[in-house]
Image 1 (tube, rainbow, N blue to C red):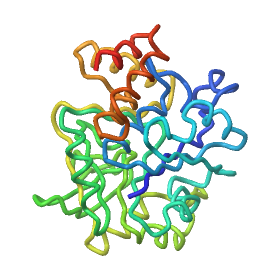
Image 2 (image 1 turned 45 degrees about the horizontal axis):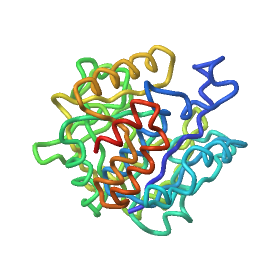
Image 3 (image 1 turned 120 degrees about the vertical axis):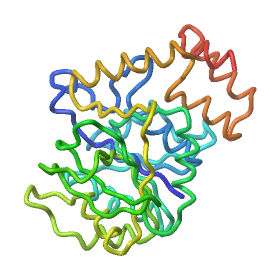
Length: 284
């Protein structure tokens, strides 16, 4: 399975912060925002990752993450020239994925739960059709709402319904089999001129191939799209890590997955030893 991070947003809702730097490179507590979606892919066992960035930003992302070899990974970069919707990431990444299964995650989404890695690997192992997550919220009306049966099979998806059929919303994390690229290639742009990821999910639903993994209790999902949500995200990460629930520590995940040795982990920790982040790595 390959991974794609759609990190091409300029972050206009965060101006003036994002005038000199794009949103996924902004800090969320003690690490750049893009570490969190990258950590999601890594926890799913994905080592080959394509990061889709805005024009002119390949060098800045490369300066941060390199080619991934320090993590035992392969990280590549490409550009989304024009914002054409989330599903456009599947077309941009088609050659990279090369017929494999793919996990697509948005570059401003943050996830955590005590058993999240187990849920991710469960989704990654479902290589027939598509799998999305369902996050329980009290008021789902502003979101894309998914209805599913007791076996996790999706029944309906609706965008911002006035009368939701469930309290579960679909966050920016999607697992697809090899059909996804062809489905995306045949989409018609929506009224706002974008290729909608909901239409990809609906195509799988109509084939009876859309599964939902529910997240109900003691989970975190944050969409860091504006200044308020960035502040909330930073405070949430601070609070979790104060309880020894470290989130988005990519070097630790690479070590836990067996992609780098303990000596390599310690070397990475030494480079950051003046920070709490580095001290955490050195304590492992």
